[in-house]
Amino acid sequence: MLFVFIGLWTIGLLLIVTDPKRATTQWISSIAFTGGCGGLSAVIADDIVPYLFDRGLLTMPVAVLVAKAELASSLMCYFGLPYTFLMFAIVYYPDYSVWPWKRWIPWALAVLPAFSFVLEPKPGDPIPYYFVTPWAAPYIVAGAVLLIMALLKEKNSFLRRSRMLTTLAAAPTLVFALFTLYLLPTFFGFSELWRYNIGVIALTLAIIVGSSFRYGFMGLQISIRNQKLDYTLRAITSGTSILNHAIKNDVGKIRLFGDKIKSEAAAGQTDPAQVVQDMEVILSASQHIYDMIYRIQGQTQEIKLQLVELDPCELMRDCIRTLSPELQKVEVREQYLTEEPIAADRAQLTEVWTNVLTNAIEAMPDGGVLTVRLTETKRKVVVEVKDTGPGMEKAQLKRVFDPFYTTKSGKKMNFGLGLSYCYTIVQKHKGTMNIHSEPGQGTSVFMQFPKRKRLPAGRELI
Image (cartoon, rainbow, N blue to C red):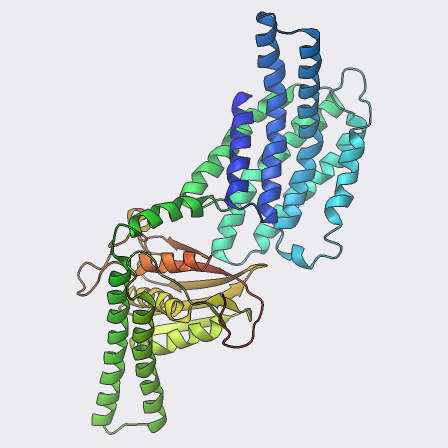
């Protein structure tokens, strides 16, 4: 049980340190801590007490203190585990923000666990099963049902995978504990079966650790990858290199629209209104070059943002419009399902989204479907860009955020800085960026940005 105690408390500590202010993190850490208390209780009884006895250190005062510590740890596990699990499932549910009386839910659900501490168990029982099981079982079942319902309800593929990993890590372990800790002892008298929990807990820890490195689990991956990229990007003169990359993209736009205007004029098909729109794109691209030079000049180690409140849907439409000459063979499907503003640097975010869109377009040289979807969660605006290209192998996917790594080695003027730069800018906006891809299944890029309260139009944020 030492493994259970150390493993659960370590995971709980890592989660709470990663994101201490988020309610879901607080409650899932509480599950780890209360579950770890059960392991601590077993360690005290099976290891610490025999150790002290063999060395003659188990005096009466020490024995009383150790017995109280063992009992407190055991009760925290028995009474705290169902409560923290149900509270996590409630807070993690997508519609929790609109639930009535949500501020009173933690207090209301805490009444039964708190009252359990004052009841006396029957002789030979560690806890008053006659009272605890009738409320602990519904708590655990309700928590598992809420997690599964939230998973089935989630339509966003990135968020669905995150919910699936969370459900796999929490629900099976708690359902197994429902039988070993409550139902079997209550109805059949098997009070020692809790020792078999170690196998299920080991599987849970494996899921958490494995997913935190590959996909991310409740924020753990962000910290790991962020440290890696911060270190790597400081090893290059990022300001100059990223500026070159931005200029390359905008010069490409200017040339595309210049050629378009020239060919239409030569063919006598000039539409004054269309020419005005094309010239606006050219002027916008030249202005973007100026803005990028102004942002990055003299900075070789850090990119500073100038945040303003903006409409992400409007910005995404502008980015797609500037790439229209490259979309001749591509079907664009746009879904804008949010009206929430975000705080962002317009020039930098335009560069990020243009890079991501360009990568998607270049992945479909013979045509395909480009899906752009903007949705929202309780605190985030989620941007999804999906293509129907060939996808990427796992080895490529692991390196897409590395500076100077590129899968377009045959192209001139390709610096391999696009996604590395995009990741850095999204992180500086306090957002997250993830890429999902499989060979033959296309590629999906997901970016999440925190929502911001509306400010007067154009007002700059400090």
